[in-house]
Length: 217
Image 1 (tube, helix red, strand yellow):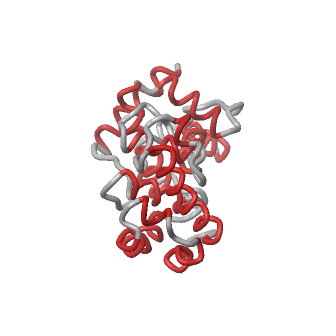
Image 2: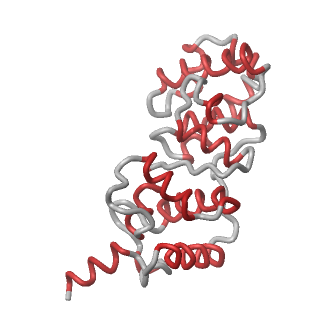
């Protein structure tokens, strides 16, 4: 199957199976989403959503967070993975927002990655979710699902190479939604250890599924 046809079938499937696809992180402002995404690194969205209400209430603006001590922030996020580092990153991020961006979350990759705790993946989430840009954030779910289905070749061994391949074939206007299609599919169906292939409507084109079943014959 040609790559264009594969992507066409994947898009058609998700458009029907998952017409609404959006982040599961709770937030009300770009600033809050930025905090939540920084906290979500190597941590579940469910856990992040448990701690952010109190955190957002205490530090409702970048200015308030910029004046905080990391030890104080740590008390709010201590159940999150790597709380010490993330507490320092959050305070540093807020200070940078205030000093360089007038307290507003910037909308470009180049500016976002200058913030402490913000790498390319986090920056792409903000660009996509907040600003509806054609940015594809590649986390472990996107990386795994893309390879299993066959959306990207084996030579794509880094998140960046996967990002470049996906953005080449997904239509630009669909990339923000496609990002969540792949994340949610990986989180609930195409799971790392126990993929629920019986509930997946992509088995007829899934490279990994076809390979496994051919080996069983």
